[in-house]
Length: 209
Image (cartoon, rainbow, N blue to C red; front, side, top):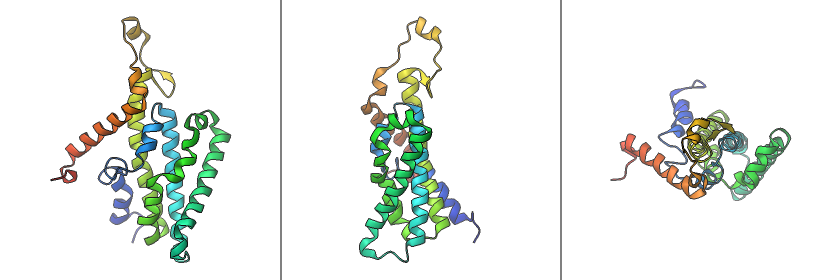
């Protein structure tokens, strides 16, 4: 079996659309609402979650045959907590301003349903490489939704992207006004709903009868 066999490709690419953790499995919604008012923190959160899920999957996969079933959740939490701590310290060292914007949400990665869900549903029953691909796929699937939501919320709410002004000053001179409502957390719910609607309309197999 090759490193990128058809099965492994499905594991990697499935979460990007057909089995997306946010808009299909409805996991990780809380952080999708909380950190998407700006594009930069959304990107950093997406990268952080992807790294934690991927490496946690690999570690649990390597240990899966030695972990007693009765303490598997505790072991998973310890592994996740260690990885989240590392990510938090790296952000403090190299992206302190973004880390402040993300506030407690970096530490709360450990409570992300996607993380614990992939450990239980995949890493405990598959090899390290497959588990790594599963973690990358689910992290990217999560990240794509965050980036899409943050892109439109920052653009429409602040007129900027990654902190840079992209709406021309001439628009404001003619009366254009940023929509402050878009930055509020409830608007992220509408953004997720629109993405789900578009996704389901293009994927008839996901529609409920």
